[in-house]
Image 1 (cartoon, rainbow, N blue to C red):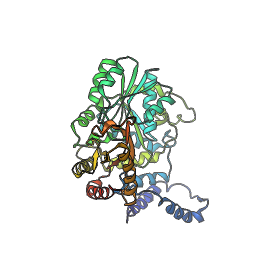
Image 2: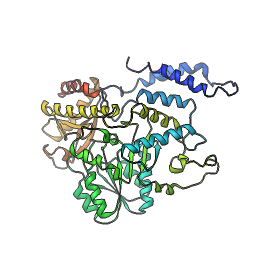
Image 3: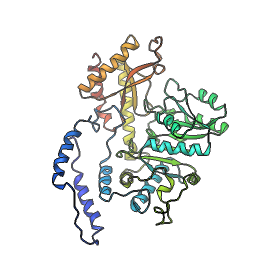
Image 4: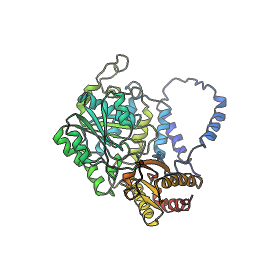
Length: 446
């Protein structure tokens, strides 16, 4: 049995308890449009959904897709019977309280007790809010991010009509501090985005050095930890990453995506601000929405309006079951994923058929097959990608800078190489590294 069925009995019992809370209501008849064909449609949908990669299985190691914890699925489903809207307390009274509590748990993970923050649709929306606040506080000043930062920062800056510029990275995919120092010395930088876990390689920008430059030049620091933020709980990070995560509490704003390592369904992002005073920037009035309670409505501190209360219920339930604490069960799951990436790196290094870009800082590893030219290496990467897929192992391909592989022979006019990329973010990956390497090496002559 590949998919979880057993937890459905828990949902049935929880639904009975939820239903009992409304037992005082007068009886009513619920008309379900199309009810007689519902099973037919659902069985048809199940067949169509089979046309997917097995994202939940350890042999899927391609993109940042981690199955939600069963309690998250159950809590989301349970809340959907009411379908609350966390924009205002009228539409999501219970789930608004759950959202505030869940956001406080995430903030506490970074050492914040006083903060302003909320959930949102994902990392893109969360980063948009952080950069919108940055633009309000430093109008017209530039947003700087590394050339390996997520493309969303440049795109969002365009939407917000803020000037944007990338900063060069080093051979390990981290923001180059010397390049940043030269850039901020011009005096027109309003915000520097530090990425703690780049999308391509999981690289962690050197936050301590960025903070030192902030002291001198006064820009804001926004930490995009959409992918890597939960690794603040991990105890098996290397020195550079460990030092950066230790300084994250000094950031002006933080973004994290619970729908990545936080075991949540899509979409669930979170944006946090160290200074609660930025809430004044959101100030607006809605006479038909906010009249019912003097308490804070989440829509008053969010650019988004309607948002699913079910997402808050799912996150709250997951964090209740698996608290965000070092040495806890949740943290051990992160450490197992990182351990899998380190083991994979070691096996590729000794196997001799592939060259890793560099030792992974989190749980992502980029690598290329051995070859005599960049064209051959790039072509082999694509052939191996297709061959491993046919063999049941699902990786990803990426086009990354040559400087990540300084030992590869450089050729005129070529600045990138097509590589293979693995994301070993499931705890189960630790037991499957041997099988993954076995399939990969058997396909290496594709």
